[in-house]
Length: 344
Ligand SMILES: [Zn+2]
Image 1 (cartoon, rainbow, N blue to C red):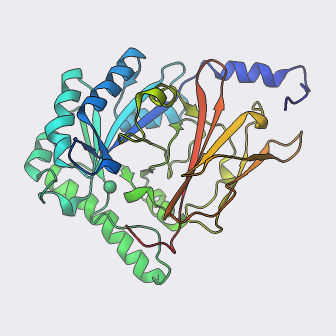
Image 2: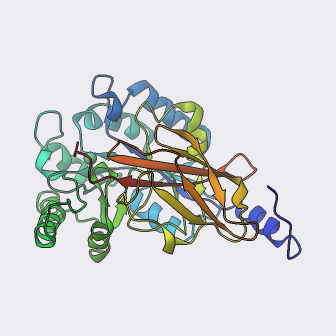
Image 3: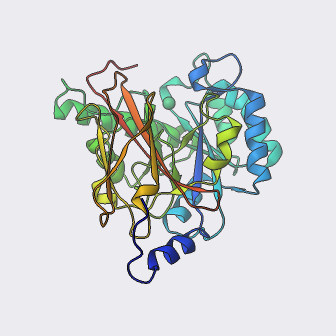
């Protein structure tokens, strides 16, 4: 429904003026290989075509740390930027992805779960040492043991605290000792976090990256920064352009829900920025397609989003987009972890 234009169409002017600004889009990869598990793999040919799309759109590929800080500070103006990240330091990143990126002189980040390095299928410390000297590569923290970080239902506060401190700080220490690097960048294994884990990341003054889609802009929360998963099932070229040109949905940060599922199906309440029209928001849920966006009245900027039936997955996502009219979209998503479901 079209809302009446109240104060002389100020909303329309503001909406138009925001179209010229830009945000940071972070791409998230695991393996770049045709033979590793499909759910976490991008085929080498698709990877190359994705990079060709980045090139064709004339986007700037930037290091994750400076790109994120510039986007959070609203410094990008009309320069839409992209950062490329790999989780887990699999051997195909060294063997297949890196040579393709180096040919283009594109910077990238590898999030390392330190216990796995040197094991079969993973990179070695010698390879990481080579990258530690390369100004185009950032090596960052993905925990020591790749555990599920939210507090488990049967875990005491003390046990959780001890586990999280060890997992986060030992990894940071190991990266510093072995590679001389200590970046304030952290990726949650499986994209799972709860309030306490976010607080642990904030206490350390780190930026926390998840696995929920969306762009990073001034309104983004520093402990739940979005990345677009780029495995073959998600990274197809027909939707890539919209993702690469997407921008962070402007909303009120204070009302974002916890990363842990409290009710099933979860309810998402969003209060959109003043210049947006709530009726233009479109949302989808994991495995359920498009779901209803319920407006809270003509003069309200608040909407409720809830899937019609419950989920059986450990991780549930709602993805919402808002067409800007120039072919680009505001993008917002939220991931919940259902702690009653078995860890994978
Ligand atoms: Zn991982």
